[in-house]
Length: 209
Image (cartoon, rainbow, N blue to C red; front, side):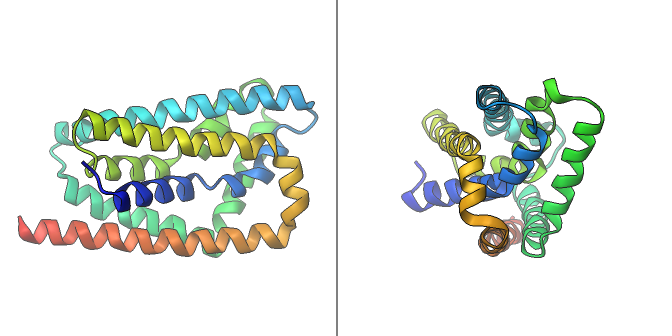
């Protein structure tokens, strides 16, 4: 069974890679012109689809790796490097710029009815970082009960994301541009530290093998 530290680290890692506060301005941008009820419908669909994608990788991600002959320690190193790159982007706000470009593309292509799936669910909620983190964490949650715990952690993170979407207008007014910038950088530093730990654990396991 995973320890309390494992559970807490999994929760923090998944929540930070999803980055709900960073999604607030993107959510408001892609739902521009919608009323509150329409935004709530988009929020529900996006979070449900994002949960489905992440839960699927939590349950079968390790199996997919084994099919390609990839060991979990090797993926842990690669995933840790990817998460560190995402943390670097968060600290220097390059990830926010990239997300805003994705949202602009969605609007210009008149995809207003499908924004729950793209770009919100994929690639903003269940993006490469969150998927990699989920697969990495699944290695520490062996057994059906532990996997159920991991799926529960993903569900908790998506419920928080849904709450942030519902309160997006109020949150955006409350924290403002400066608050978003500070929070994004702080979460980036935390994610960078977790990424380094992933790499260190992967290298240690590879050397032991």
